Image (cartoon, rainbow, N blue to C red; front, side, top):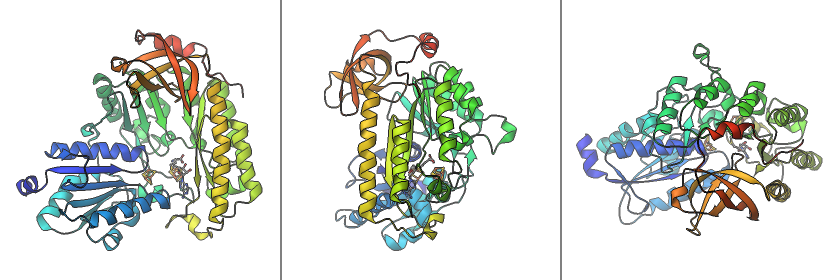
Length: 467
Ligand code: SAH
Ligand code: SF4
Ligand code: F3S
């Protein structure tokens, strides 16, 4: 069976939609396919195998994929094997075969480990195959992931979500929360550090739930962070995403105390009205959320904050929308992703009419974006004249005499420099901005040493914000 497979499929094309969890899942699939001897190519027209690793979070995400699949059906020159993986696979399951008849397989987020066996089945039996388990139950070989980025890596620590926000498909597309064994996470992080990676981002829909479902491991999220911090060679650790209700004092103290742990927390509020928050089943009130912000800013001076916002949730009034605007003004997030509500099949919010007209949603979306852009710029202005620490990630695509990277607080920075700086930490003094990127001069062209990290953690932060 395998030799037939090797003869017929030599190249593959993969396109990733959605969030970082999908990016990591794609890296794992690329690793699996390359291990099978396939070569990745960028030209979808030429590939023997096409995989779309999909997202179902909003209607637009799904429409993009269906549009793309429709175009593949019209390919004249050859007939590639076509597979849909990711969240849409779980959301639509085998009904995708009716929508897209030339589709060969549908592989859900909890079945990635079966990619090559499913391919074998498709090729040997010539039939449509689907696997969409509701729960992540199998150990996945994360070490096989093929990463393009030599500096930063994603590491999955918990899959699924138990929160059931009423608008959201994720609990249905990724299943319940399943924490990964802490020893396996530590081993992967150690391997990444040994391979020269400088930054890791720990991934989960709600990383703060980590460990709850494996009490015998006696390792909660902050315990894991303390263990990772001890690894040699890693400069920075980030995490995403955090549900506000599970942000603990222990986590705040870990951000304050651990040299590797970056001072940036993305913990979405979603909206500023208590009535809508209840309807969304976010299980915190605006006041409770503000208490977390105050505690975080007190324990970690200079911490940068990020959020997601949904506007136009069913029944949201103008004044409730204004409450969201006020909360953005009050908190002054460093970054905010603003979304117009999109009704998703199978979610509890389907029981309410999607009653906010599209033009009203768009107007609210635009108003929020404009407000947040001004706030983001204001936050960035406070960097002017400051010296910040930048982890250099790559040479700028626009001008190869510049390199770009991020501060610990996730701000984009570019400065003059060359490829040999990639993967080093540099001190950069900010002198101006272009859009939302800070531009600076490198004040220390010698890479900073790991032992300097300890000092940095306790030095005055360049972005001290008094709340
Ligand atoms: N687990 C993360 C969010 C993951 S989804 C968390 O709870 O913080 C990323 C964002 O997409 C959500 O925070 C929400 O703002 C947005 N989103 C989810 N479902 C949506 C929907 N049906 N319509 C519009 N935006 C949605
Ligand atoms: Fe979706 Fe809520 Fe889970 Fe985030 S916490 S993934 S918004 S259900
Ligand atoms: Fe999309 Fe699934 Fe991520 S729905 S946002 S790819 S978890």
